[in-house]
Image (tube, rainbow, N blue to C red; front, side, top):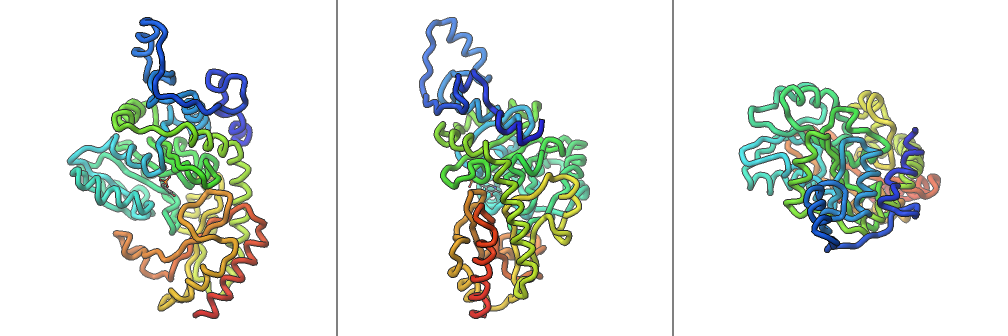
Length: 392
Ligand SMILES: *Cc1c(COP(=O)(O)O)cnc(C)c1O
């Protein structure tokens, strides 16, 4: 079955939903056992999807976890209160004091902060690697390297990583390969077909899809699942059924939304490429994007997220302010993956990264192209850029 079909039916199991099409919101902390025999059965099977204690989940959780596994692959999936909670649960489940972590230099900013502040304090060393490293990752592996963390495309700058090459090297040395698969979103990338052991998503983005709830997921291979499940439970990680209900609802339209985001973003990106003030459009579907050939080989498409850089490097803050302040549809806000268009800028990529891969480029603007009419969006960009030029 095609994913467009699978997504419609994913997670629907009478055990969780009864006769309803979608899982009801099932609130519970205390679960009651009718007899000692029931209790004993619970004590034997509480790690399976069954009602035992609220933190272990309710049918709302189980339906969403099933849906995620059916669509993303892996053995099973857990839910967390946010994407970064999912990142921290994955890292803390598999790293201990004295271990070394290889983290891609183009990771999401708060992931870097987690490594540099929390993991460091716990005696876990992080080194940052070039997203284009491929199988040369082998040269960076130390005796105590326990995990390689990938994010593809890279945050803001959109480099595509050769995940199969990295995981091939990692497998030989028994190193866990983790991927922040938020961009991949279930439709654009299948992590477990490319050698990933642990796939992490900020479901806050495309899965919830409506900018009204926060949620994270971690999916694992069968081998790594017990450790992830136990550690997450010990750390008290769970998510609210109301938020999971919103994620399950968002999930049902994910494939259709992604197609629309993809088509509109491609049209906007092509238009931007022709604008004289634009230096470079950073979009994985463009042949000059680092790793474009890998994207063609491994990905099933793109979505609404991409960036561009501006030619003018010096004193351009005023002009970028004029640009952002004049948009009517591209609203300023962190995050992405909702139905609405968003814009953000003023990133300091020289300060926020360890390797100097980004010295040559002008200021970066990131767009999330929403579900508005694409010609209206282009008109909005045209209007903003006119004000940008005036302020230069
Ligand atoms: C937003 C985001 C996160 C964090 O997710 P939250 O739900 O906001 O905590 C992690 N990784 C990537 C790539 C993101 O875009």
